[in-house]
Image 1 (tube, rainbow, N blue to C red):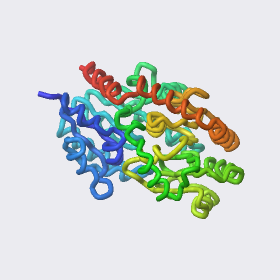
Image 2: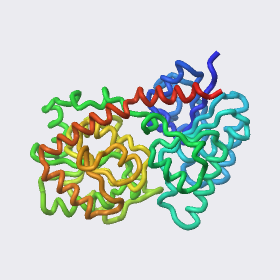
Image 3: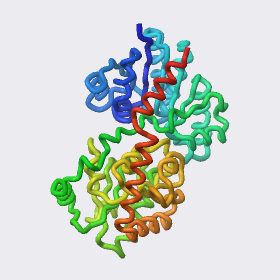
Length: 385
């Protein structure tokens, strides 16, 4: 009889997107149950088809909502007592805190939490104190913590959230690795099809395209990116900025002047959310990813696997994927001038920047292939008694 593992995230897109394929793989060896909020259009139910696993809906918010959080803890506790899992493994901050607390109260023997970023890094004052407290609760209730990058592990130890013996980085980092057979530029070498998409987006054949993929929020460095692009575009009008992702105006809005420039210039294209980002990498020339904080960013792995030179900030995850001046460029956080210079450098390199992209793909194939991460996590599960 298979042992039961419950995988839990705050929103269902994290189960189906960030952990794509992993739950179906693990279900060969364990009885897997997924828990998350219902999501829009009851997205959680779609996991039955996508990953072949049963699910239970427990509503969780991404904000600080004490009363709703207590209700969620009680609901999770009831599920855990009924299902009697061998392991509860949580991802995302809120699901981690609520899931680990409920699993502790329910007496689940193995309580695992993956850390894929620390929102508290950018917080100050009372909010930072509160987030530190919540983080400490998560770590104290968990039996094992998996930072998804070595830099993140160092931050956790520096903050004193837990002891080193509780921490482990799975494989070489990343929560789910990357399927490099899927993110392969050879699948998108149809020049006519690529130009058709560029034309749809008002991108000329001669335009150099900088792309950003992710949430369009302050923490992702979008204000700095747009400011740097605005300055560069005034001197180099054959460049375009392609923004692929949704705004989050409630949680982390952009500056008004940033939004105004995006909306008023035809040099910036915003596609909103897209289900398949690969065609957008294929029509781009370089990734710009000036994020303030990350765990182990999928976007940088994806862009590198698609052979794009990557401009990233000097933060954990990013600086573990990109080798400065070899597979991309690394710049300081929140430094518009450094970002501008890096974008100018990539432009000046011309075809030489393509060599960076090819080396980046080779590095990712060797270190972060999806199956490597899955096998390492399976091995970790099998060591638990």
